[in-house]
Structures are given as C-alpha cells and as structure tokens.
Image 1 (cartoon, rainbow, N blue to C red):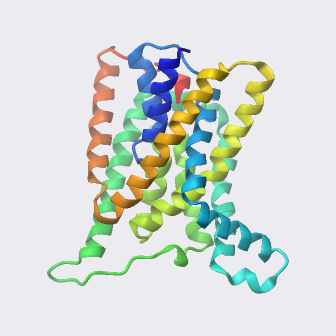
Image 2: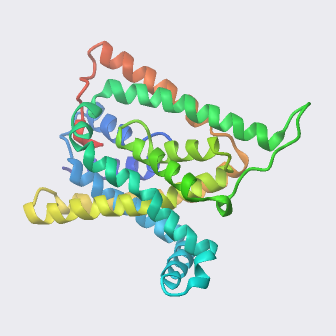
Length: 291
C-alpha cells in the first residue's frame, strides 16, 4: 500500500465513520473505483481505532464521569441509582447484541453479506428508514396546525429495553451499507429520542465494539505481519484527525438541521451502485474486504 492510498483511505474512514452513510460501503467503493489492491480487514479495523480515539477525546468528560460512577456503583449501592452509573451498564447491555450476532453470523458477514448488491439495497432501505425517523422527530419538535409540539426523550429516559433495541440496531451495521450511526440514530429517533440524545448514545455505544474489534485485529496483525505498519499508522492518524472534526461538526449540525441530505445521498448512491453492478462496471465483490 502506498502512502497516498493510506491517506485517502484514512480520510474516507474519518469522514464517513460518524455520518449515517456507511463507512464500510465507502471504503469498499473507494478501493474498487481506484483499482487499488485490497487493504484488508485488519487495516480497516485498526484505522477504526483512530476514529474511536476521536470519540474518546471528544466525549472525554462524559466518559470519565460514566466510568467513575460505574466503578463506584459496584461497591456503593447508593450510586446504582445515579444516571451516569446506569449509563455505564446500559452501554454494556447495548453492546451484547453485536457481540452475539458478530460471532453467530461470522460466516455470513464474511460471505453473502459482502455482496455489493446487498450493500446498495441496504443503503436505500436504511436511507428511507432514516428519512421516516427524521420526519417523525421534526413533527414532534415543530408540531402543526392541529397538534402541539411533543417533548422527546433524552438519555435520562434510557432504560434496559431501549438500550437493547439500540444494541440490535447497532448490530445491523454488521451488514455493509447499513451504517452503525445511521442504524442506531434511526432506532433512537423511532423510539422517541431527540436527535442529540440518539447521536450521543450511538457514539458511546460504538466504543466497546470498535475497540474490541480493532484490538483483536491489531493482535493478529502483529502476530502474522500481514499489515504494512507505516501506511496503516498514518491512515489511523488521518482518520483520527478528520473523525474528530466530523464529530464536532455533526453534533452541532443535528441540533438545528434535518438528516434529509444524508437520506438523499444514501438513496442516490444505492441506486448508482445497483446500476453500475447491473451494467457490469463493478463486480458484486469488488473491494470486498476493504470495508
């Protein structure tokens, strides 16, 4: 892998990881359109450590407060009713579905789920779901001629049931094209949470899964020497820097703006992908491991 390739792939990872447009799909398409050699699953998982490090730093105060409260709640019963301590447990609970499904569906994830035609369909379908969820959120926030605005839920309203539903939504991102943030944010909006609450929990929920996946790939890569370390580390740094900027922008964007630009983009990209595969321009398995 060249340094230029690592820069572009790191840039794509940082730009798309937190937006509801599917980073895995974009990494695959970048490699396929550029005609580059497959960078491998290890490269992708390791560069995701860069973007998750951006989450750790951006939400450092929240994370430090949650971790501290959670540890204290293990020995102090009075702390177990504390919201931050409960958030620690809810992140753990929400991480269960992706752990279970990631193991039980491993063969499908590495096989049939990688087909670009399925990726295109999930881009379109999840785009529509996100659009519907966003529309419902806007209706609650604005109200209408014959209905008053309705207050939406915040993270203080999050319980075990909703945490598990969030977790199932996150697990759907095991299929390229779904988008981890897109699925969890859509799930949150459909359950009645504010845009900011849905996005914040989405980012926090991704930390255990992504760091665990990246850590395992890092361990395996160190053992078998399958990764070009220089370009991979460079791409990880690029993904971190760009990812941090995207988080800062995105959290401000969703407080006043609709998700509709992302909805339209997903649908158009999915249609384009179906056309290109149908016309034989792209193989259904092009850039397969890049995502």
